[in-house]
Length: 518
Image 1: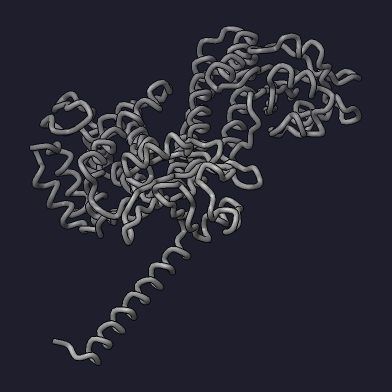
Image 2: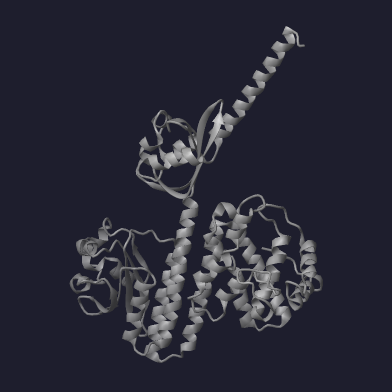
């Protein structure tokens, strides 16, 4: 039995340990790079908030404390109302992957919101973890916009092949911009070189409702009618953007009529004709927009393709040259998609580059022709494109995935295929991507294909994907090394992996000394 002195010493030690533990967790709470709210589980009253959330949403400590969750302006119009709070009390857990929260100054921020109930000293407490998804959200928006521009570029290729007249071609470009690009109205105008410097509309599509007939657009720099985006684009021969028609001073002559027709933003894409005259494709969006650098570059590519298409029709230049230019544009777009995906998940981006380089080495050693190797390299560069549909926290999870999480990961070949299936590439890029996790014995996914049902390019990509994944760092483990990777594909040779491709891959490393590099 302890003496009084020993008992007092024990209590002091316990008190010291408790104070140390409290200080440690208080520091974690205050320095966390996610927002944290603590609520009374019975009343919903906010009892504590950490500095990150106060800074993120613009409310002071006093403005949070003592109020109920749904009484705070930032949460009042969100899904976090009384009904959801009652559900949380019942289930003990609630989650929103992309919840829009409004800051004190009126901005909207997309967040991931997770709440759990736990017991603390006999009192039920709700902990709400709030993660700012703005960067991820913007990257996803940019990727979707880039994919949309890629489809516009692809359909423009088909339009050129089928067009028999200049008018047909320009009307089809306008239709593609509206039906595929999602713009409200599109038109093409040619710059008249007369004294008034008019811009004459020769093709249009979408919701016009008399807008062009009364617009009187010019490209003269001496009148307000010539200083809109179309006039500036023709004079400068550079793409011009109006992100908000309601506030842009240069759009004043047309603002009222444009807003009445639902135009909120505008893009003007100039292109040269074969006689050095300049024309312009103008697009009107239904929302205020802030185009990313990559999307602006792609739109500039599209305008250049229009000019080349018109020149080809006018001068009867062989369509082969246009196909080569368009092919280069498609390839640039593929690289933009890969770069945009890397902003969301840097691991996937580096992995895809390394796999693409290894695929090219294996294909060359197999004797494939240069064009086929090139198509395989492009497919491998974006073979994990479908991971845009997988939550970022799963992709970057620092441990092995659960069965449910891996089930979500297995959807990415189909998601990537669906994004690209309607794009007219000279190579079967969408199908290569869909097949890259198939295996020759039928053990792969998503369709369980076997043997000759698989493209050779897919068999090469499957081997290269395994080798790079094992040899390089993964979010949940350190790199296993190239020797382990080559041992694994040797073990699967002729079983799940094509034996000729495996032998060729081994030769690339063991005979030619290939090294996986960024």
